[in-house]
Length: 169
Image (cartoon, rainbow, N blue to C red; front, side, top):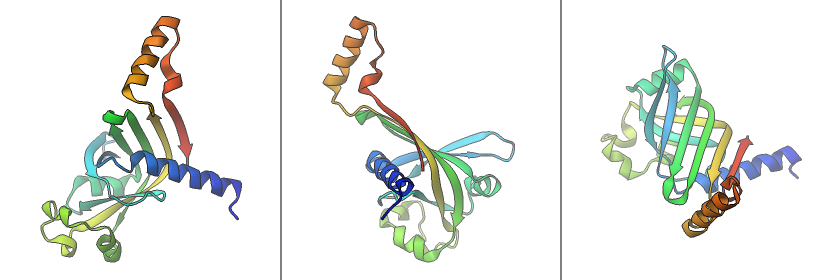
C-alpha cells in the first residue's frame, strides 16, 4: 500500500503525463558556463511520463557541456491550440546506456542521427523532474470567450476558467 506521499507523487506523475503527452516538442533551458540561460527545442519521447523526461542528443553539442557543468534545467511545453502550458524543472544527466537508447529509439530520429543507434556520439539527456507548474484551460474556446466577456462585465479576473497549479514531485 502506498503512503500518502507515494499517492501524491503518483497523482503528480499522472497529471503531468496527461498534460504533456500530445506535445511533440519542448524547450530545454540550460545554464551556460558564464551563467547565461540557453534554450532550444527538443523532441519529446513518445512514452508515458514516469517522473523522468528523455531527449536524444549528440555528445558534440553545447547542451551536453552545459548539463555536465550545471545539472539544473527547465523544460517548457506549450500547446496553444488547447491553451495548455507546462514548465518543469529538475536535474539533468547525460546517459550513455546503449540499451536505453535502443529502447527509446524511433526510426524517425534517423533524420538527426544518420548513423542511428550505433552512432558513438548519440546519448540521452534524462531530466528527473522535481517540480512543475502548469496552466490549463480545459473548456472549449466558446466557453473561454464567454468566461472572459463575463469577467469584463462583472469586473472580476477570469482565473476561475484556467487551471493553474504547482506540483512538487
